[in-house]
Length: 375
Image (cartoon, rainbow, N blue to C red; front, side, top):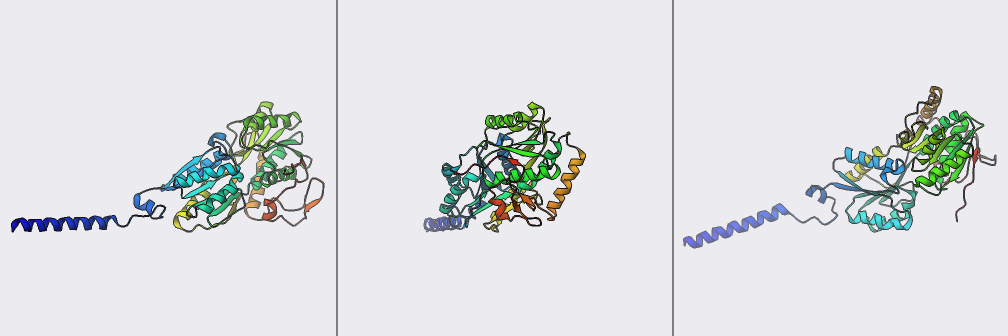
């Protein structure tokens, strides 16, 4: 009897232990379930696709600074990146790889990733995608960019006050609206303080090619330009200006470290706060697809510190115009504005719509150069 009693007690203990284990374990969370990361102590994964290396001192560097800012300010986030990813159809497999690695949010940071982003997003509805500088959206795809043309205009004021030859060189990447409106805004800023000055454009058809971009700047300097501006990811054009003993205006990040005797200032990006707010919204379930286009007011774009060669009068002119833009009293593409042929494109008192700015495919008066036709 004692043996049987002990057996029953042992059996009851085993059954109780089994029920306890089932109760503690609960149901297994399916892969991709939003509750799984928190239950398992995993971090939210965020991926970044870069067109160049983070060490380019330019465009990719600015995005990578934003990525680091994101990690610093959201401790539950883990980031990863891929650098020098080719644009076009080839980028699709790279974006898909981040999906396979479990990324909850993926930022694709160059224009040429747009169609690939949309394609991958169609197959992965549980992932949020953000594409930089494009115009396409979907239920789980948003796009984002900054009104860099506002900062470009301000740097144009600096260049226009600095030039002595009244010929300013502009090393330009690809003939797309983003680059064209930057050239136009810069030229309008130049001529607002120096109506006699002109801006000469050379196309490189590159984003990141240190040798080619520096050589393009040298050609402009040989033509008599005494200030070099750029829409390129490398500091090569600024270094060419310094070697020639003249001045330059950097882009993407503060390029004065690479050419301290030349750089007047730089038009810069500040992506960190945007990345934090966007990822927080996804985490909290409040994110919605749309298009973001922040400017000076939001702090997404701005100017790097001035070089010692920039006069106090110039700084005051820039600050006054900057405050007008931030207050919404005025914006860059407000008429009267003429094109290269002297035809009025924006009448006095009128201004271009965002759609017209985003689709810009013409040069303003004062630009020397042409826009290559699409093949």
